[in-house]
Length: 129
Image 1 (cartoon, rainbow, N blue to C red):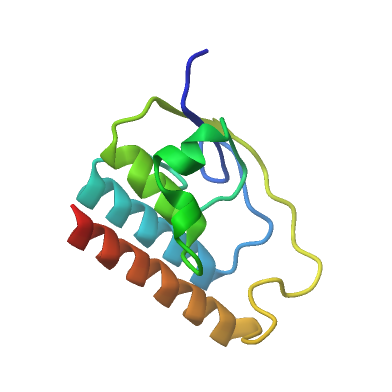
Image 2: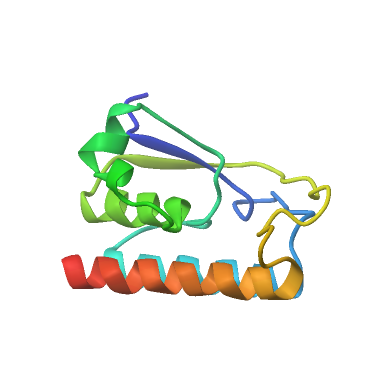
């Protein structure tokens, strides 16, 4: 339908994430709202990986040049900054098997490390504006 980016949101309408803990739900809510406020997004879930887009978007938003970044947030931020046509559809997320956040930093510390990577991504994108 002409969208540049389609996101399957864990928080739109009646969708749910069986994978969320209180910490991850609050972090997702906070980071999504920060992205919306600072970059003009209209997301319900800026950090979900379930997305569809043309491969050209990777190079046009220069996402291929950013290693070790919070890819999902970086894509959300740059798409909002470029005012791309974005759609969100609701989708449930089943629970994970094991702890996939970080092999080097498992559990709680892996989630904290992930949050710090998102904050770094947001700050770097603010500086690039």
